[in-house]
Image (cartoon, rainbow, N blue to C red; front, side, top):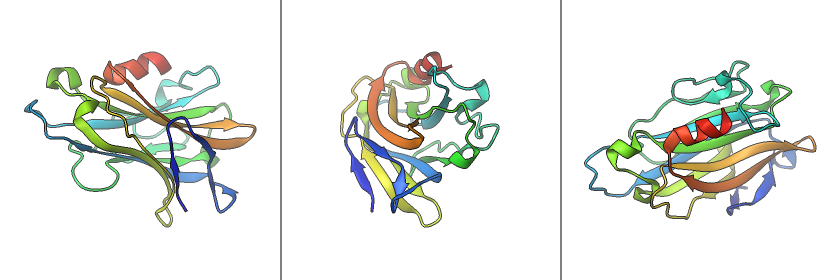
Length: 189
């Protein structure tokens, strides 16, 4: 049974009372009609962070140009250039059994590629969500629908998983920023 989260809510990553170690983080969105004359290319990324809030190494920044972490803990399934179709637009597979010992959290973000030049922002995006599901049966564990309208933001921090007291938890964040992907690179790298 899936849990629908609210912004700021934190839950244990569990299924049937058991800690979940392997799952997929799927992110999706639809684009409103826009007069920018350009197609939308939204990109999902993950930052694998140490306790200090910085990526473990540059290879622990998972995105369309670096699809897999060195130890295989995180794997991006590939860049969807159009966002066409129903369901997840981009996904990142997580296997916590392969997590480095110094991994404290993984932050998931979505950014609009070349947003400034294309005159695009998240105010032109609707039905944005992040969900965590078990890939063996496609059973959804939790979902967070972003209900806010981000009128000038070009990047959104959807959520993060983090370790606390030996348990992996998920936090629904839903915070928007201007500055695109570079904003997160500056923050986490």
